[in-house]
Length: 349
Image (cartoon, rainbow, N blue to C red; front, side, top):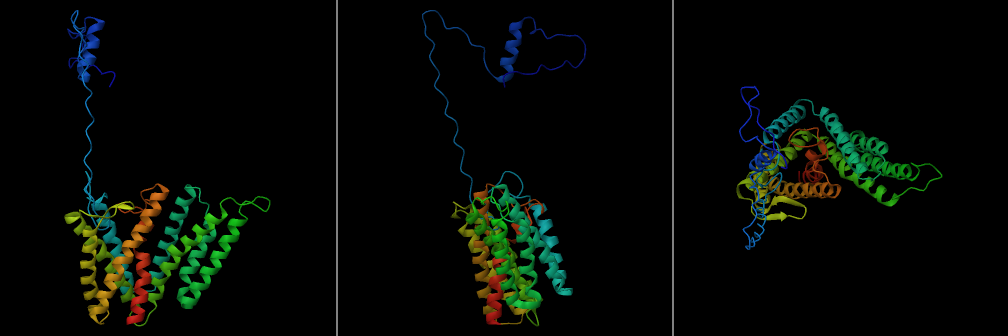
């Protein structure tokens, strides 16, 4: 600080401090406030030694762990760098809502998931356009809803057809979005990222619809895969906070640790054994296969989003969910897990 405020006397009168008798005393007061001593001239014939510069302290490296499964310490809030109470409250509320819908009105889940997919697609498109990646938002969001919803009446064929049609519309839209007389800039990059986004969110999410439509226990299959993703997150978080020491992929996600990954495996395998046996009444070894598969793809899904956010220079895709970020920040591990769950359960059950 270059200056310091003088304290106002408590009496509020016109009293003056004895030190304020000259302009020099004000300088002394400023020096005292900043902890600096007024320089004194050296004695005649004696040169004053130049003090050695004090090196700046080197900050200690922060411990690493796994996000959604590991634990680097943070000065405040949760050790995963989130507002833990808010995250727990939001996560619990969403979880109870999904369970109630799946158990009592399963088809309503399609509508709830469809809204989430639409918001997530909008969040990603908004972030991309902020980074000057001009994805065509209107056909991407509308076509993404078609990809998601057409799995209900038409099955995998409806999903595939809607995906191909939306990709073509997005290409043409981006080609002429500046008119017929202006050539598009970065057309190849923007259309490739558009198709990637279409596959990343609506296409992968559509497998949750296909899983739900499996008779006679599609709702329980969706509930099983959602429980296993939560088990993976909780196991990774607990193990990472308590034991996380060895970073998994520090260049992408510094807080992910191998200890957190192992915790995810343990919790997901136990969860798979219980849910497949009790909910689906199937061979418990299917639960082991499903648990391992979901941990791998959920972790990879989280890393994919982490790398995308790193390249975009952002922390979260959105701000809708306190303690979590945006809707997309909650779906990153769910989306590939929906596909793997549909593949494993449709094949082995």
